[in-house]
Amino acid sequence: MRSIWNGSVSFGLVSIPVKLMNATENHAISFRQIHLSDGGRIRYRKVCELDEEEVPASETVKAYEDSDGTVIPVTDEDLASLPLPTAKTIEIEGFVPASAIDPLQLDSAYYLSANGVPAAKPYALLREALRRSGKVAVAKYALRGRERLGMLRVVGDVIAMHGLLWPDEIRTPEGVAPESGVKVRDAELDLADALMDTLGDADLDTLHDEYREAVEELVAAKAAGEPLAQDQAEEPEGKVIDLMAALESSVRAAKESHGEDGGKEGEVADVHPIGSGAKGTGASSKRAPSKKAAPRRTAARKTAAKKTSEKPPAKKPAAEKPAAEKSAAEKATAKKGTGRKPPAKKSSGGARKRSSA
Image (cartoon, rainbow, N blue to C red; front, side):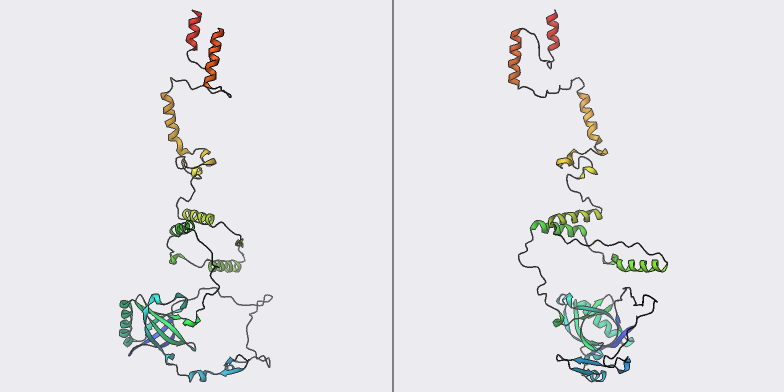
């Protein structure tokens, strides 16, 4: 790695020569601006607004504009004359638990490398002291023309430094939180917990920039003269949703994506045995049984085989009279001497034989 700064870490009276290197890199796609008609590059030139002439870099200096519009030139020589102890030194101010650093303060990340063989021993001493204490070092350093705040911590066998924003650079979140009066029910929290449990832990190593990959494929296809079909992303509709329904749907979708059964009770008859959906109600319990319901039909056949000697019960007429009315009607018929019996009685055959005898 190429170093971007050389200096030393001041640890009390111990001075550790180090080199500073960027710990991160930007993989974003870089574009240039061109003239569409002829493909010529569009470049920016520094032009003085008074004489409208291009000014070379050697003739430009920094300046501070006052609130009343007054412009005060500040040259590099002026800045170099300022007393800046941290110009070439990372000055450790103290040590705090890592939890004492607000993540909002975290800025750029760097690696510190021991600069030379003599720096190896004090470098290792600071690294192991940080590791054993479980704390991080808070330091001040100067980079790119300004003094900054930093945090030193151990990453493997290396000391890493995170640039920190100054506390007064963190804005208070006034007017950001929702208005008071919003209540969250326990049932909604339970569903949110279930959704979090189903999604599980995030594997950061598997996450990648899908948009950058799509841009690279688009550029490659256009270079080959084969533009890709553009899939337009669906715009959010922005309508009010049922929070409980959305949470339930999210839990089901998360379970399905993780290979779990995410269906509702009563809706599983489409893809599961009838035994699984027996708890369902309504139309779901009346759906055609699946192939796995065969054991129930076999049991029904065995039951029917045991009752082969019994005749199936006769179907009830559409408008059947009560039992009390039937008895009265039979007695009246017997008094008239008709000799007719109700057709559904099994003893009617024996009555006919006695009559003919």
